[in-house]
Length: 135
Image (cartoon, rainbow, N blue to C red; front, side, top):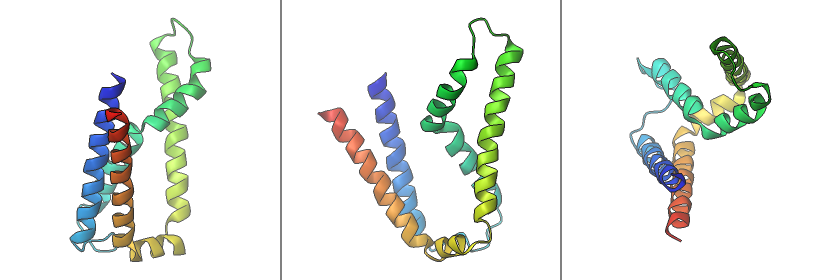
């Protein structure tokens, strides 16, 4: 199973890397008006946070001490809600802190370059994962 998960992760990184490289070619950047950009950004952000294994491992490490064998559904839902509030609050704080700042403006101006660099980095990670599976 571990190899299958690593392979799936490598394929996902390849897809993301190619997507980033393609998005830098089409000339569209975040400063352009696009009718679905807010919705698309929310969905992409949610999926990144929801599917991020590091977040899963972090929250599991933190909350595992509070989960007891035979916990009721209510207790498990309360812990899940607390994790949701903590993680969601972090994203809101980061988004609020960055919005309207000089850093965000510079990132938007250099959007194509950022997309290309991130795309190459993701493809590099996918290659390293693939190489580790072969060896």
